[in-house]
Amino acid sequence: MPSPRDVRTVEDARRLTHVKVGLFDNYGVLLGKYMSKGKFFASLEKGFSFCDVILGWDTKDQLYDNVYYTGWHTGYPDAPVRILPESCRELPL
Image (cartoon, rainbow, N blue to C red; front, side, top):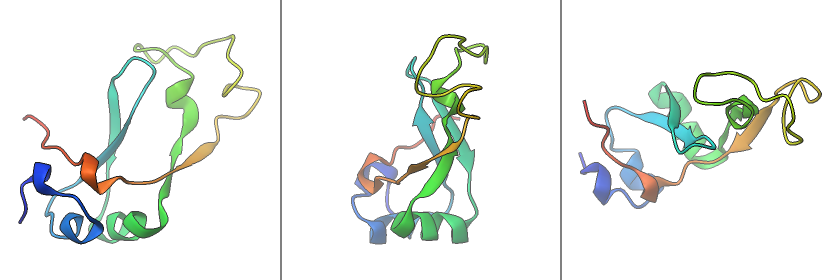
């Protein structure tokens, strides 16, 4: 198994045993989810969706009431994202 910092390619990422994927919100907080191996492998190739509400709330999960990108007016849809293997990092316990 490669060290997380050594992951550079899709092939490297396929050798990982545990994976949590995430996105950073407007405050730099990592918000993520665990994926099954099958979904992770498929997402490496095709991407996946992540609810864009993370760009519409603050660090206390309170919704903004004056944003254009996302909100009640858009229904907080899922946004397409892709995994960047070279951004792999080990999460502290």
